[in-house]
Length: 137
Image 1 (spheres, one colour):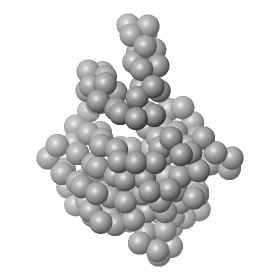
Image 2 (spheres, one colour; image 1 turned 90 degrees about the vertical axis):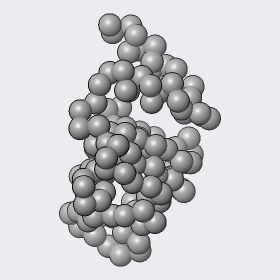
Image 3 (tube, helix red, strand yellow; image 1 turned 30 degrees about the vertical axis):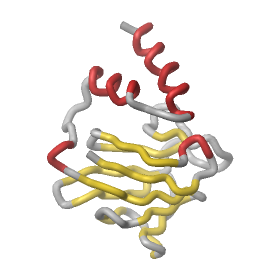
Image 4 (cartoon, helix red, strand yellow; image 1 turned 180 degrees about the horizontal axis):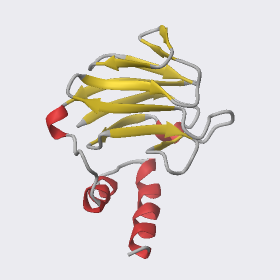
């Protein structure tokens, strides 16, 4: 389980706390990302978080670098709760991490459960996603 807080983001709809039970979490402008940042200049897949027994590996994908607690990182770096990651106007704080509660494989049911638990502006988008999933059965 990974709990993050998006403190700032060019896409205001993403600001707030989010919890994920997935092993990998992707940020970018493409619709296949877990967090879709709708802003000019954001690449399809900007950055990814990978949950590992050692911590949360944050790695660049289609960007040159990110800031980890204010220090420039190219490639990847492991993070723990309290650390902050910054890229393309987005600041994310890692709030909580529990590797024992990370699903190694994502089932459709767990995805639907996470969608149904969303609140705030993301809840409206979640309803549309659930509708699309139901239509593709």
